[in-house]
Length: 329
Image (cartoon, rainbow, N blue to C red; front, top):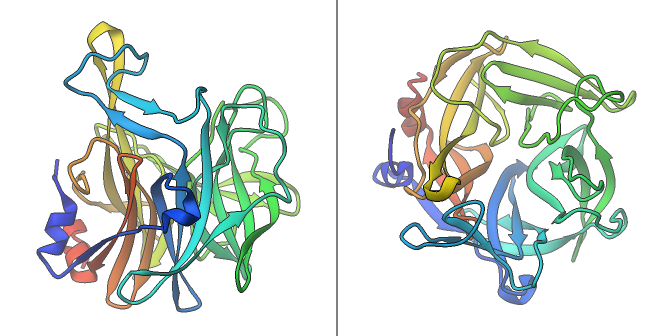
């Protein structure tokens, strides 16, 4: 396990910046899990804002089903509400413009306790700018599916102009899974996602026929963890590069659960065979860290991640540093 990738990068000419939105815009709510995209030469990020604080009470007794990681709400309910903010950054990675993403045209009354589009990744397909993430508030059991939220940027606002719920392979028909989330959009292949990391499963959403088909499936590799979705998947050199998250769930006293999130890069060839994987790592040695963004930017990569569901960061990583870390020459 490689601890503190941020320290490794910043000791080698990398740069880390917090992404902080004026609290007059957000109401002072928490920021987390940003996504980055280079769009027509500009750095744009989506930042998720939530109505809760993740409290880590490792050394205390806390009467909660989920163990030492506890959600604290300002409201007296169990609602986890998400809003999204689209921002542009300058070359110094500072926010220069930011607006709430107005989804009111397509919003319906919430019928589940998780509200809004969660952990949205930015991607431009067919000259349309999308946020693609999971939504769970539109059915009574909280069943999650990936959604394509097309957005348009105006002079002083950002608005959702279309919304599409992405079925899994085999739907419509019998529900094959309860919650689908964290699919990794492939930036140069419209409506393609890496759905799973090991074995690598690539799917395509046929937007005209409203169905999803599997287009690639590689053999399982014997590694001691699952590879879940994370960043976008980007073309690089003769293959593709993506960043997964890994969840380690453990039992704590009284049968409660605890968790730790770590990450791993995968480099695939053109046929989606994984040919390189980085060491498993943390960004800042935190318990809960989560990535939603990876973009190539000049002689660097931009990586965005959330920390403890309460902070958002962007990490500028020189290409040579990341290539050495993954052993991709």
